[in-house]
Amino acid sequence: MAVRQVAVLGATGSIGGSTLDVIARHPDRFRASILAANRDSAGLAALCARFRPDLAIVADPAMEADLARRLAAAGVRCEVASGADAVTAAASGPLCDAVVAAIVGAAGLDSTLAAARAGKRLLLANKESIVMAGALLLEALREGGGDLIPIDSEHNAIFQCLPGGRPDLGRAGVRRIILTASGGPFRGRTRAELGKITPGEACAHPKWSMGRKISVDSATLMNKGLEVIEAHHLFAAPVDAIEVVVHPQSLVHSLVDYVDGSVLAQLGNPDMRTAIACALAWPERIEAGVAPLDLAAHARLDFETPDTDTFRCLALAFAALREGGDATAILNAANEVAVDAFLAGTLPFLGIAEIVERVLAELPAQPVVDVQTLVARDDEARRAARGVLHRAYC
Ligand SMILES: NC(=O)c1ccc[n+]([C@@H]2O[C@H](COP(=O)([O-])OP(=O)(O)OC[C@H]3O[C@@H](n4cnc5c(N)ncnc54)[C@H](OP(=O)(O)O)[C@@H]3O)[C@@H](O)[C@H]2O)c1
Image (cartoon, rainbow, N blue to C red; front, side):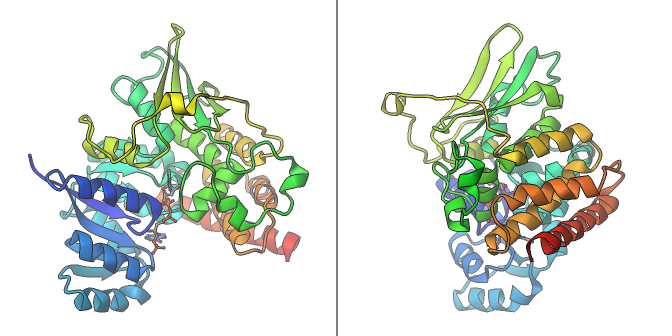
């Protein structure tokens, strides 16, 4: 069996770390041939010393010299590059067969599209790219002829519950896709109680250990909104065939409801290594280092309807998806600006939904034409979000 060469984009992050953990368990199957990060040259150099890739990249050119110095000091011989273009070129280049798209935010779009166009196996964690450019990403995949296996745990669960992964849902007899949501750290709280939430509280997720941006998205339920949009594109699911249910134990990762009344679910401990191992080895199954699920110890599985009056972001994501065109890209850009401001302490928690709502109202959706216009609209939405932020909160 040939060893699969894997590019881990976002190697220093939470998904990157889980991916490298799975890769390290299977040196006979996988090798981390490319490692990329943004600015964390120390973290990246330490990973290079352990995984010995062919190429290490920092997106921020100002960090390249520091990375090169650290690698030389550690006796690691690998090519070093920097810049967003270098990340994109590596994702489509000859040094990898598979790409783990685990950069956070819209910054992951170009490399994700490049990997799809080049026919690599695309392991998609970067949900923002499909939220921004769903139709373009699917077109790039068709052009490249490779496969996309989602590693967002919910979409990976649905992928596992559908015959063939991504069939025509109507013909497969699927009635609904049901995405589960943990409800985040503030489940059950009222709007009044959310007024003084701090970034530290928002990032303390009760079930999953994740990066800061997705942790805030989980707390606002925007993460679930982004996942609804992601499911729409990945599984060609009409918006009315996608439902969200809150499941605080985070053991059922999502479900597929068939017309004959069967509901198939995928369960497991909340550990991203399950979805990553599934996507790396599919259609085979490999050991992921995840403890077996002890149902009796957990004892209960609870489900409830999400509170979209308190957690407005989920309703806003459904509305943007219904509006169509580039509304979901506008939603994503406004959310990224708002989450950054919240993490920087310049925006209260409830202001995140307010900024997204105001920007969506300010910029009516336009048809998605190509990546260039989409990126220009992303810029426009970020400027609009900064404007709202400045007027309302500074
Ligand atoms: N964490 C989870 O459990 C989880 C689950 C499902 C989906 N996801 C999705 O996976 C993605 C990554 O999430 P995460 O939690 O792993 O985030 P994270 O821990 O914050 O890590 C983000 C990674 O992206 C890198 N990065 C940031 N900006 C970049 C840029 N411009 N160019 C290249 N690399 C860049 C960071 O490098 P530096 O370290 O140098 O900043 C870091 O390696 C997100 O889209 C998230 O929604 C995450």
